[in-house]
Length: 390
Image (cartoon, rainbow, N blue to C red; front, side, top):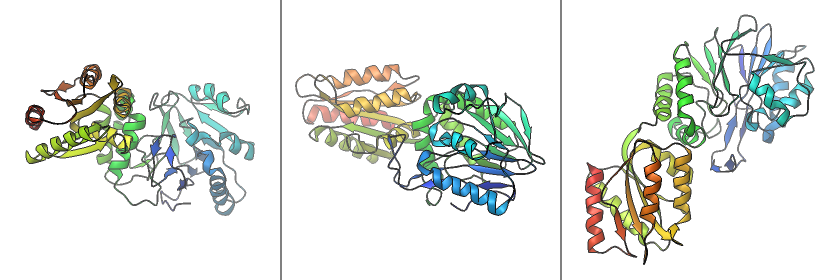
């Protein structure tokens, strides 16, 4: 168990997963991920969420160690379920079977969905809460706030008012285990954009609720417990969930078959750098798609460069654009570079996607290459670089 110091009454019982390769079977996690779970010990004892089935035995051992060695003779009274996604809720039935008197605290949507995951009858254990309801543990009081579609419909967050702790469900989480030494912003941004990014409006609604609370500590379900400079994390979430560009820069995402489109993308990058622009290049066939999507949201300008393939888009570009649309991409300036040896179609198809993005502006001209760059397409490339640099 990672050593996480929260307070005398609030204990960390979560687990690091160093063995996972893909989070949600799609996102690369080279530094693994943590599944966070907490124990609040007062006159009553509350478990704050469980963990993924991948670490069940480790989590139960952590829980038993706390209960048997530090609080002998006692058993937990409540299990608070913030989020029913299996990476946090896989052990609800297991822990209920271990502690027969344990009550399950959550909202109506959670209880409606529980039978989809478990065979146990929870009716005698159910403590159903609504928006603003409270639960006293003694000197600690839990306040419950619904957070539908952040990023499932049943999500809620819990505020403990004595120590001013927000148990934030998936909010403010990040990839990486707790023993990974890295900047919070990058992996939290990649986590947020790719997992929660579609749901900006619900996140904004939750931030408004959080603004009314005096929060001194944030305990997410993934990533480190946040105790210092909370304004920084709240500001990042406000930027990300309102779809505003976070930084000035140009992301160039290219999909190249034989290398000619890649060469054009790299030449454009060089032109932009000469004009003093920050540029971030992604080979969509080889680079981490989630990172490319993260940077498309992070920076204020994006260039789409793709070859025509079978009369359509080269598949990795189609996949990239699908993900941008899925995550509600908006409020950017977009340049387009197409390639086609006899019937270029990539530009037309990429423009159709761009026209569906909210509040996006297309930079002119569209660069059209027929197989390889020549004097005419290089002039277009220079003009596009000038437009983007403005």
